[in-house]
Amino acid sequence: MPGKYIELKDLFVYKISLELCDMAWEIYHTFDWQIKKIIGDQFIRAVDSNAANIVEGYGRYHYLDKIKFYYNARASLMESKHWCILLSKRKLVNKKNYDNFLKQIEHVHYHLNNWINVTYKNRDQFGSDK
Image (cartoon, rainbow, N blue to C red; front, top):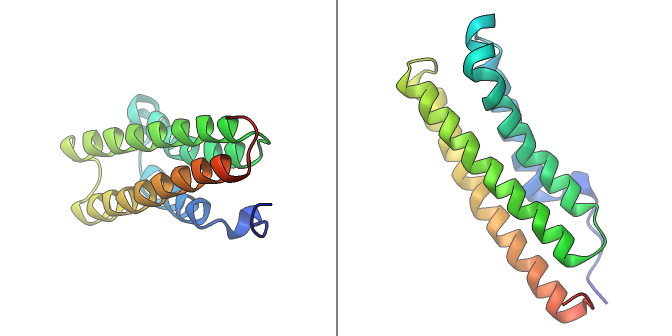
């Protein structure tokens, strides 16, 4: 039987993904309507999608369903990085916010990969949907 149930609010990878969402919002809300329309909306959607996919995967019953959504979360995380790089190249985000955002992306990426590995191990040990 798997270990103790972790409530979503206590899931570390989700908590740090929410921090990334907050950081993205701090960047996004400074844009005027035109920048929001051109690039900002895609940026904020990608960042929020990372956390949302973690939640959706966590809510799934079967391990392989969970893992699929965690992979989607990782893809959204990489898309978020892309948009942040473009924001920097276009001088729409300052260096400090850019550096902090990329550092947090790497932090989330590391822990998301670990969470995917833990989910695979739990599937192999406890799951029946191999």
